[in-house]
Length: 409
Image (cartoon, rainbow, N blue to C red; front, side, top):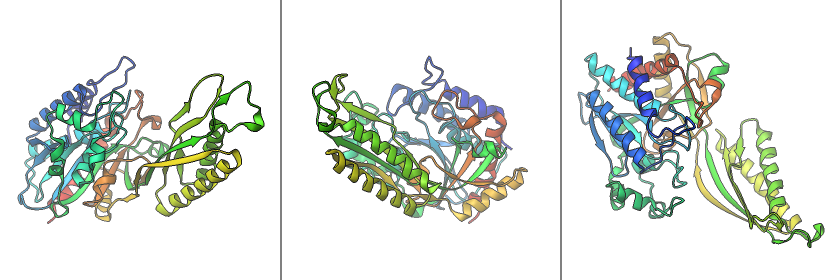
């Protein structure tokens, strides 16, 4: 139903913004690359016949009016930013795909009961300020003053970056959407895994998004001379942390569904001849079941306590974010299954192991997600790739899905 060549050409054009010598893309929030990307996406929205606006937290929004402008809005879209040296499909497909669907509606003269809006969410990845999903948090109203004070590696705060881009931090509340004004949010996204590929399927219907727990753990031991301190008198923070990392892997493997990652580790003082006195590391813990996740967390912390006692070190933990699982609505899943059948695809359901803006949007409206096959499951990488045909299949499923959801009263 959609124009797949136009879809793919726009993906490639957007993918040229922030291109690195490595072949990857870096587009962080409130940067020149971010601004250029928004300007390009705004031009696509206008070509599609949508009205365009930017809200108070930097989300770009294109709207197709419905026969009843007061009816709850059907939302779609994804994020416009990337990780460092990322790929061209993550986030971008959901935005460009949503625009393509609405442009096709307009070209075919299709009218809908409910207004439909495409969101290009600001700063989903959180790479610049270590605070993810800023745009969707703004929509649901959970941005706090302390969030605006968070700084990047150059010491620039979120608030300062906003002002430099013509936004007023004091007005973040103006981005909030009341619950009664929204019907559903549907996010089209590449899978970023290999489930669809292993099943030889181009499109999947997401049943829900796993929880996301981020912790910062600081192990404090005692720095000392590497040559003059006997092994049995040491309080080596790195050795303790290494044992903790093994605990994380072991406890996560026990459930068969949990995934846990230590993605960052900092050793201080950091000298080749100094016993590490302090080690900081992060923990990313996820599961589709909140109960399972909480039990794994409990067991990990129990083991951490044992390690601290045995090795004479102390542990401090800081919760960076704790987001519960987000189940996709039955109405969306039924509409998506119908959409797959309409274009000759086998309906297939799977969970999302990655975090998405939909995890925030579930706080104010039902959500749904459509996945598109990723080659070799690679994402957040210049090698990230989904074929033209697979992208078109995903956008066609979105086409019928949004049509179903927006036509009904």
